Structure formats: C-alpha cells, structure tokens
Image: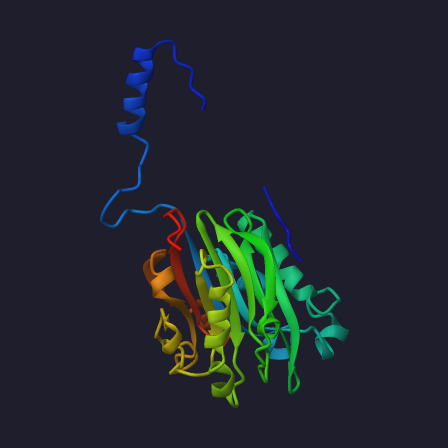
Length: 294
C-alpha cells in the first residue's frame, strides 16, 4: 500500500541585473554549500530500526496507538520488525477496532497522520511464518520527505534461501539521496546461519546499479557479533537494545554511504519506558542535500 500526500525576477537593465545577481549570491538568507572541507547541511532524514514486539497480538502486547505513533513520529523513516498478522483472539475481538490481517498497521498510519498533521505511507512484505509467529516486514515513512521508487522484494528474488523470514528490500529517495533499505529479523533460536547469508544479499543489491550503491541495513539480528565486515558493512550503533544485549542496529557500507552519514546515531529507550516494546529503537541521521557520490 502506498499513499502520497501534498522567481522569477524581471530586471530593467544590465546594471540592475549585475547588482542583483551579486546581492543574491552574497546577501543574507541564502546558504550555498561549501566547496571544500565539511559542509554544513540543512536537509536530512532520520531513519530508525524498531522491533515493535508482537504488534497485532492481544493481551500484554496490545498497543496504545497514540503512544506508539508519538514515539515513531520523531523519525522520518522506520523499518519495523514483528508486525504480526492479526489473528487469534485479536482477530475475533477486533483489538484495534478493525478487521483484516494488517488493519492494525493501517490504523497506526492513520494515527501518525493525525499526530503529525502529515501524510505517512508504508511498504510491506510477508507474511512469513516461523513456528506460531506470522510476521511482516514494514518500511514506514513520511511522504513529504521520502519517495518510494517502485522497487521492492525479498532475498528470494536473488535465489538466496533463508530458513526463516528472508530479508525485505525496497528503494527510496529523499532529496539527492537514493538508497536501498533492507529489513531483517533473525530467528532467536539459531540466528547465525541466516545472518551469514546477508552479505550475499547486500552485494547483489549493490550490483543492481553501478551508479547507486547506497544500502542501509536495518534489523533485529539476535546476535551481538555480526559476520558482515567481510562485505564492508559496519554497525552504526553498538549499545544495548534489549536488556544488556546489543542485537538491534543499523549498518552501512562506509565506502558508499559514509558520504551521506551525518555522524549522528544512537538508541532511543522511550519505547521501552512507555511499555510499547521490550526493544529500544535505533536511529541514524543522513544528509539528503549532498551530491550523490555513487
């Protein structure tokens, strides 16, 4: 489902043209990017990765949508894990006053619209089953800052087999920054075999377009030590996200995406404190006004 929201000067003489051009370039109110050194950027997006803990289940997992939307509204783009298929008692009792396997996600988006007075949209893949859990991957984003570029799929598109929940990818643009987003939730019981296949997925995405190799990997990996350095991907945040464990993070290949990285990245414990999830959220900020370097 995709939703999308919402000088001429005339101069009388050559002299005035010249004067006004000089004033336009050097006068107040206009900031030109620096030509050398580290420019001060004003256009950016803040992206996040968040395990929302069984969103769609009943009982202790029932979410206050306004609280959840308020937490997510701090960010421009959020990769969600554990968006569950609405089922069981939640389906029969209509926990979110709606019906349908993803109606709770639609309700969340509507609540975000209301909380922010902006238009939000999402891209989803699934459902994927693992034991009794039926889960979707979701990219949630502000449509005034981020555009979906009509390209989406899973690792299965590349013939790379995952035992549980093949990672989702989709392509987006914000300003001059085009990027592939990848969302992944590793099985908690045996994460390493599938996590080890991520490098091949990331390499395949980077090879799709030699002029566009920005890939951001989001996820709950259920591992602290990730075997991804061989393909150039390094984690941006190494802080505990569930108890003492640093299992949720965001990763980039600095050779291609370090140019856009602002240097700001951290965890947000507010979802845990508010009872929305048992996972902290992880976020990072990227410039969207620098020239695309790949």
